[in-house]
Image (cartoon, one colour):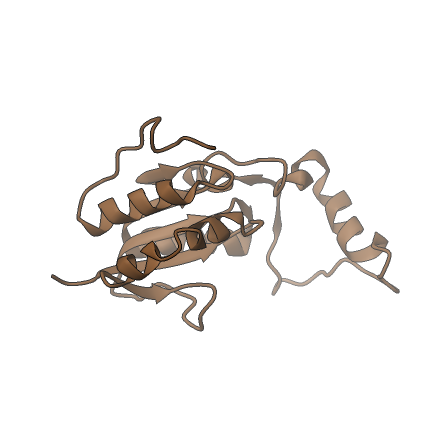
Length: 182
């Protein structure tokens, strides 16, 4: 049986979903026997291959034009798109979307001018830089999502279940049992 090709990427995140994925512990070794990880932010392989992947996994919300391009590229190159975590599925949640409570210009001024460590700060202005959206938004506001795995972060058992089902060629059915948070 051919290995399932998986690509992952992250957007506006806190990395909690990635930590929860690692909480699968030794079960990750079993999963990797059946998976070819084609691209991942932790590697030098940053983009899904042009010939596509079976499963694309995105974490985080969409907060700027560069992240929107990542979302579109992943959707274009994967058969099944998984939105992993509350930011990707619902957005905004308070942790990664604090900026949704402020005007975009206020956020940029705080980040580039008003921080305590900034000397002679200035908000960058270049067509080469990505543009910050007014608010962060969930992935499904831009592209079709096939599998939603909510949680902040999702628990490791739920992530393992979803990946196991996808590797086996089945669409996961998330029920209360799979979405229990202890």
